[in-house]
Image 1 (tube, rainbow, N blue to C red):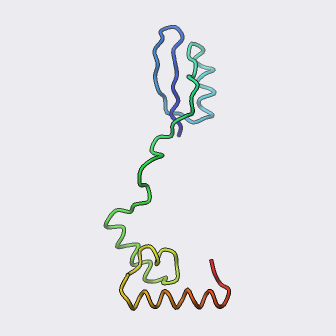
Image 2: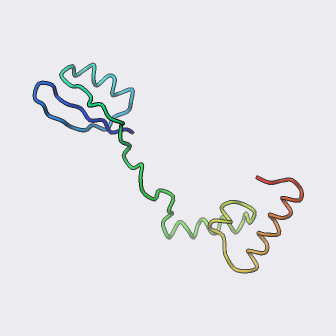
Image 3: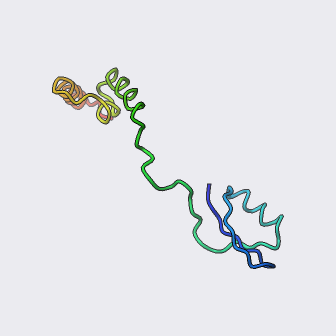
Length: 102
């Protein structure tokens, strides 16, 4: 949801409000004493590492990856021991040879 900055025309107070785009339109209609300050809306939580899984969840992902050795999940979270890596490589080569690439 975007974060918008509004200014109260009567008091000069400036404040931020977290609302949906459709709600913003209605909010401005309901509050004629407010005007939106023109700027690009900020997105809350749009930065940071949102793909990093918690440590306990990595174990779950690894178990799933072990059951599907040819998947993208197996490449990212699968076991890295030599036997598993060779198996994964053989599966990828076979898929490529048979034209079954993702």
